[in-house]
Length: 92
Image 1 (cartoon, rainbow, N blue to C red):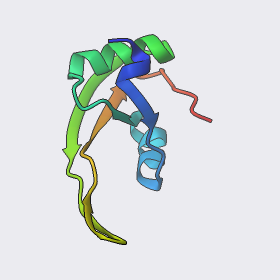
Image 2: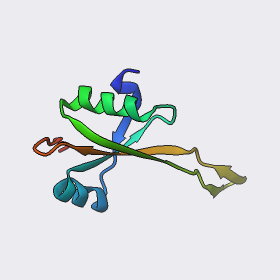
Image 3: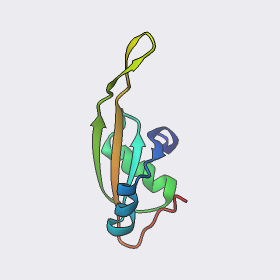
């Protein structure tokens, strides 16, 4: 898969920003069908860094109330990527 289709967006929260600075770990929302090796290849090709480890988790989509009843949100997949020492991704 092309990196454009695997990586949807970087997740920038307080927790991930601290992980970026302290542990060299970055979080991305990825396509649900992508595997860990595809995520690793996509990050390496898109940002020109060396990936050491990839962990993933599938977030369940919750139900929410709208005007005419309940709607189920879609499931999303989150990938946490640890880079080798010295590599940095410039998100800002």
